[in-house]
Amino acid sequence: MCVMPQEHPDRSSASRKAPLRRPDASMSLLTNVMEHSLDDGYAEAAARRGETGTSRMPRTPRGKLTLAVGLVLAAVVVTLGGAQAQVAAPTLAKERQKLIDRIESETAAADGLQKSVDKLRDDVSARQREALKDQGVPGAELVSLLAGATAVTGPGVKLVVDDAKEATSGGGSNPRTSSDFSDTGRVRDRDMQRVVNGLWSSGAEAISVNGQRLTALSAIRAAGDAILVDNKPLAPPYTVLAIGDGQRLSTAFQDSDDGQYLHVLEENYGIRASISAQSRLELPAAPSLIVRSASPAPSAGKSAAKTGKGTN
Image (cartoon, rainbow, N blue to C red; front, side, top):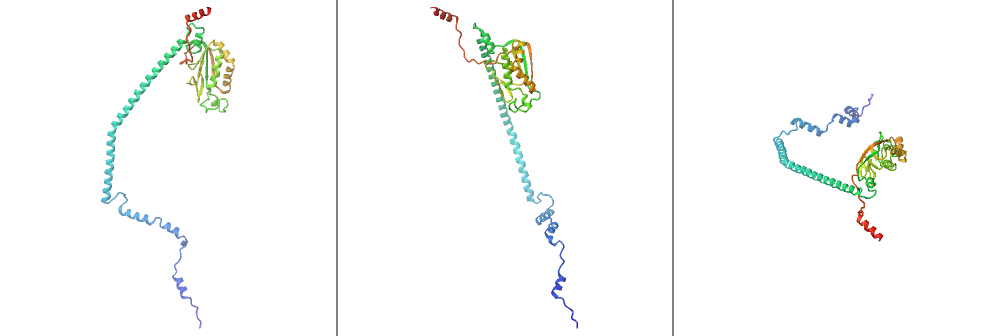
């Protein structure tokens, strides 16, 4: 009798009832994300929106009432703001007009004071010129001329000095050592000092720069890129007028060390300069003179008395 082998009842039933595993069972998390891209909260919100409609406006009577009250309050605020602005507008306009009137009044007062100052300054300058005129003292006319107290007319030379064509505003460095051509091509205060001193030493009797009369107390300085003559800023080109024997003065200046210095600036840095003899030049008087000291001239009577006392 042949006995057939029997399978274990538990193993055979388990093999028949066990479900088949999905190939992507190990990727359950990614599969869940792909199949359910929205969270439950998003799904519930979408469902509620579908029930109430796509509009965000409240559909309940209470919500409509709240919205209406908000709109009314906004309208009231805007209306009150507009009314307040209309009420305040005339007041602001009046204050603005008062401020404008005050500014105009103060400006007119300042202009009047400035005119008074100019008039007094001219009067003082005229009195100083009168005091320096010839009053029987030898050399007084020459002193008046050298002091710039009187205007002068006569032959002379006209010297025009200008920056190079490529020159622009420099950076405050030394114009004769900088590698920037735009800086070296600018006329500096020391250049004008040498030009003026060269004309004086060549025989000039009176000099002006851009209409500014030079005196024994005049100073040529720099303030940034500007050249100051007696604290008055000048702009290029710089026109220098010198009274004297025109042709002789021109030749003497060009042959001097200062004339050669100007020639070097022309050749090496492109500074432009031209000099010409003039048959007639007019130089104004110095705008202001400062009297350092003064003493009355001795009268003829006192002089005679002193002389008589000395002879006795």
